[in-house]
Image 1 (cartoon, rainbow, N blue to C red):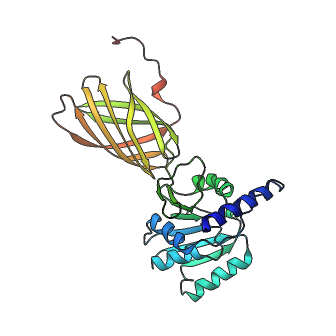
Image 2: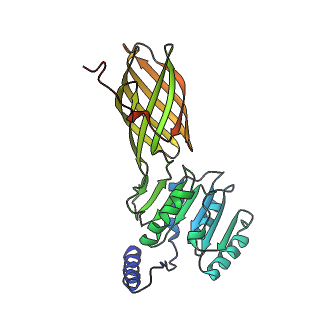
Image 3: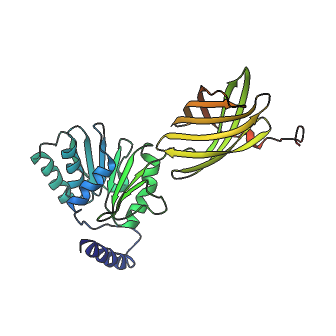
Length: 292
């Protein structure tokens, strides 16, 4: 019944919004407490979390998080000053005002760089409008949780559908672009030039070593953790399997690579450091020497 009421209210607001100016507004409807707790369980709260609620209303999401974990901090923003004052009064009454605070502020003006968990329950178009802010400001690995509505074409990483959908997204690192690295293999220095393409947490890529090119397989991006495999014939070494695992740190990736050269009777591990480059050796001329 609650879900029917919410959908009806959303439909009425959407119809009214057609005649409005371009500015969006999401009317206050308190989140069901059961769904608040489900959202926060999905977020898997940690002691070092900073929980941020965009459109915090009476503050119940951040206040509930503070009760569920006695160490985390949190804050919320809301355009309604009366609700902000009520939320701060509730924080004082519950003895968590040293860890929780609410601000009279537009959600689009929130600074999300410190957040590790971002919660929202706003109209779908409003959440979609906030998506670029989240992807631009929030650190890789930040968890985003919502109740009922989604974030457009950005698919969630995890969902709980019973009795009503709550969803979680993990902000991915930005890996799209050109990358290069070198490995010292069996006394030879091998240079790799890779190109990664990205759509939210989905990534794929190709690479080149010498005059040989190959597709990167099993590319996985979760927050700032990146992994992929590569099987490529290296000049003077032979057909070699690679398993890369690293942490994305801005314009570098640091981790390890496990290597298994033909005949694949041994596997060894090397440190791996890739850097983002303005151009890629992938596009350099290949020629026909050695091509059969």
